[in-house]
Length: 177
Image 1 (cartoon, rainbow, N blue to C red):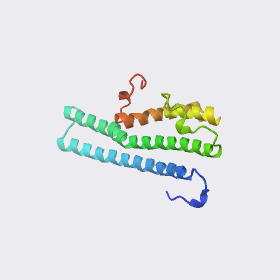
Image 2: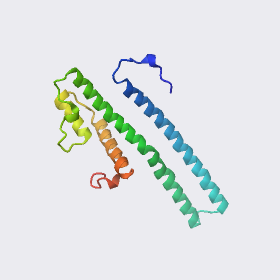
Image 3: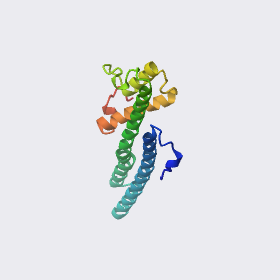
Image 4: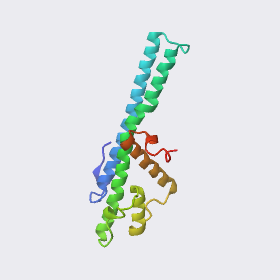
């Protein structure tokens, strides 16, 4: 997508973040197209293998080939492509939340900096940001419960990708259920 800079306020301090959102959107579209392309390609290979080997549903090899294909195209392939996207999306969210807090503080220097807010407590970024916005900035960070729940899931998925290669169950089995 070509972005027309005349449509934006070039003095907007969040202009870079807006461009990052557009870039992630383009990346998502391209990634999904690529996943579909690989899935179609793998289906052609599967069909060719089944035809070459003259396999039928009565053959155990047929079932094994179908099972391997399904696991690859429905589980592994999307996980490996979408994982980095989820990490980037969450990183962008963290960066924007931090940048907005810093921009507000620049206008009101008497406020405690976000970077030092409740560092000693064991809080996730989302919890710390929500408390900072509420207690220091007096702004509700995310008033919509559904959106907040999605952000929480995104955070957990980000952690699963970054720390457990996308396997949510390896992070905290008691919480992922």
